[in-house]
Image 1 (cartoon, one colour):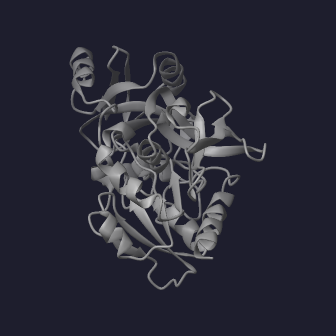
Image 2 (image 1 turned 60 degrees about the vertical axis):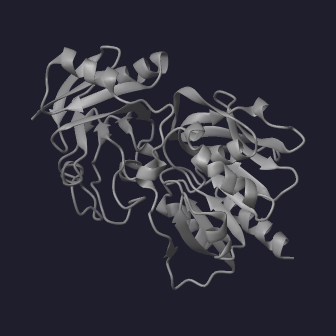
Length: 362
């Protein structure tokens, strides 16, 4: 079946439908990871976006029930140069096209993904539409232009849980952690458990009273989608809890924390998405290769330098990759130390969180 991808600036690609039927609008972005497409599809941080994979062959090892990062795929659409219909891997239980169809994700292949990537790097991430039912180029470009962009949008309520739950209830960890779900990835929960934590996941809108009733030793702020500046209703809870608890934030959690601490964020031209981003740890001098997925960044000049310091810097563009509070046991990073997919250089941060909880208990 034919499919068409149209960008808001008039660029149009024709290809083959390899997923669900229909039409999907979203911000078109690219990811440079060579593997990990299933984790990318199920990362809630991609809500509202159409993802282009830069690696040319996607789907060759299929899909399984174990490598998911949330309850379902949250991206709007998926773009590939070539999609594999016959996977070859002993763990595979389904082909990628069957998985995309079953989850109603509109997808297209036969596309020059190198051209898309170069175009987005030059022009910036932009609104787009994939369709298997409308093939008129002008009509599709108009739909892309009329669709909602990422700036100013709150997608957290689309991905966050509605009710609190205990992750792996049989675990009796040394630390009792409450995780605010802005779009949390499952490997974060696995690694918190591995670090000795019992974790209760609560909705993004959980109140201070609801969180304190769980008697946490620490508070975790998860990754998630959308514009952190549109989430002002989340800041007051953190402003109340920061002086009381050790806090660790990742990705959107890092950005929301930055706003709660008096900082601000801005939209990157095309974002950072992939498994090979170099980050300088300014406290140790070490360079860490990191997994990343974000389209916004923290403004380093927006903080009171007596309260907050920058701890990590992206070596590609100098943007902020981490911060810590100078007076409270609070820190966050923009990149993904849970690395699913990606390198493991930053996984020590989970142990850093437990050290802060140990010190708070002492």
